[in-house]
Length: 328
Image (cartoon, rainbow, N blue to C red):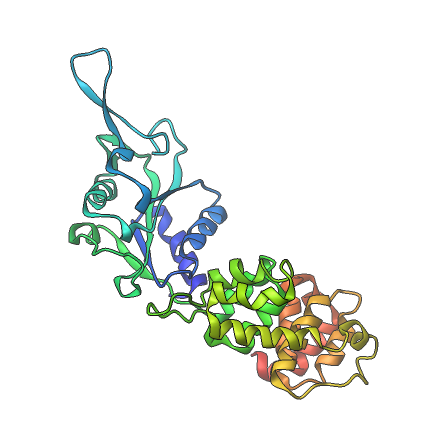
């Protein structure tokens, strides 16, 4: 299930508080999607990291001025009558938890209580985890826990990631490269030490790009996405940095040269879209009209995603009419 549909599914199932388990290869953004769904629902999301928890973290027996022992619950557990009426209780990396922790979680999912203390009726339990085939430390999930949840598998989708990346300030070099080499967005092989994943491209490449000396970039990128992907990206960045000045192109959109090499066109599309504003968007569209159709669409759609106000301009209307055979 692609990310946009997964987020909408979480939001749709929230009113009935159906317990969910979201699984997929490492680095795909499972936890981020749950937090974004909670944010859009305007509800709290309490996250606990299961592999670093003990059974005692779910409550311990404690004396309380009587001759009995009572459970003292952790402060993070939502308690009916004391916590917000609605929310998401997220157990991250649940599949790395052992059987004892899974048993505790199974009771929370089914009885919606912890040691007899009930959760508010409006809370949803969601778990995230990797698959055993990913060799990421995942254990077999107990069958009775599996029977108490709906399992949804996250699939990485290029357009979904591109939209998310634009909205979250990912560097244009990275976005343009992934559009050029979409197969490297999530190229996960458990036999390799380092893998290209959405998380690695954002945290290990985009955030690092421009912060380390240029001669150290390849080693840093290799340490995040692997040697092959890093080598291709470094080559692409060299092209990006040698592009004609996009500002000069936009000063003369009717006469500026249009490259023929696909890699250069991908890089130039990102660079021009990054500079698009309402005042220069007509010139952006004029130049993009001279590009091959697929790169014209890439440039204008990238720019409009960055700044939705551009879609209300006359230039965008004219351009979309000229390209309706591609858009619709």
